[in-house]
Length: 495
Image (tube, one colour):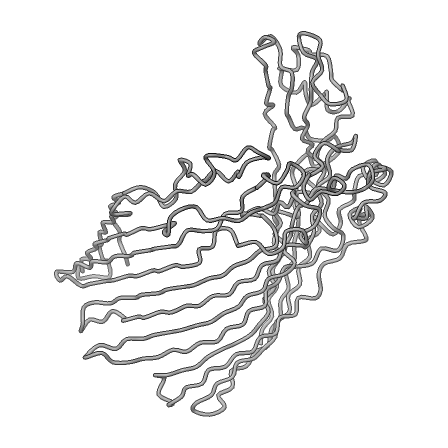
């Protein structure tokens, strides 16, 4: 059993658009911009600099019980607790809180403003992070050559500060999208809310003064007052074997696993139409971007992200030994991953009001089939040669399909053409010199992506609109992953 305590200070800085971005239309001349995007800190606030003195506490108890020479049982429980003052003590600015409560589009919305307005006392650290686990291994012949194993357990993550701090930093460091009256007297902003252009706005600090004197709409991020901590339940069952082939001993493993993850953080749009709905009446698509409240766009952070993953691992391993002078591994994994949002590395969920609209989509970035093989050989004279081959099947992509109609688009998964989505073969040679002392010299040469295989990273994910199918749908763009053929030479000293 054990106890762990940590006092961690975390910081975040928001400076996106601190350098203004001016937009010009050459059709009306380059004498003045028609729009500017910029950000400025609010007087009397941290101004986009956030610090949180977090405290982390954990306690666990576990036991490995050798029931007999065949069976070993592992069991235990862990509890974790973390305070995040930046989240728990946050107070929603009074003017913003009142504006959210009074905005008519939110009166009949499917979210309650009171769930996101904080008074500094209505948020608590999550206390339910209990994590039981149970496992076993059964040695059939009690000689460690054929072992059946399995287990089940729950593991809690933590809400990343990178997400939690958005509320504080976006509240104290506003991002603005401001329009000016064109040189020809036209205001391009919907609603006709434009300022008269002044060349002084090109000077440092002038736009900050504008933001402090004019009630400009901006983007507000609001955390749910009852955020939970994400967790995963994992179940596994497998078997390991050792068998002799000639004078060599090989090891094999087959493992089935299932992981179900809950309560991941998502960011969704709080905007609603005048009747409180998200989608147009009678339709299945139509994010209400154009229905920003007068005080600015609202983004809500909630626990809605879920995944589920089934996988099969088959592995063969011949360890390197001085007697045989070589070693090799072959590992194949089949994975079927699903997620309930269209997120790809970030937490955005802007196509629908809640995650329930997505259904279960193929997990982005997870190949169904993956094969990894490695080999190592002692070539003599202190030289070691090694190689690695990685092959992956083409990954699913979640594309937007508006062929049924602009108000009836859908997220439509597909796989780009090609059975292989990623392939790479690397070679290496290394040599180590014994200097007769505790100091060892080594040199290593790597040839990465030996065959200069191209692994495309981006594709055209637009099916097209009504009556206008996209002829380039599914074609690759120019981005790649895995790099091109590369030679690397490195030197080292060990002591």
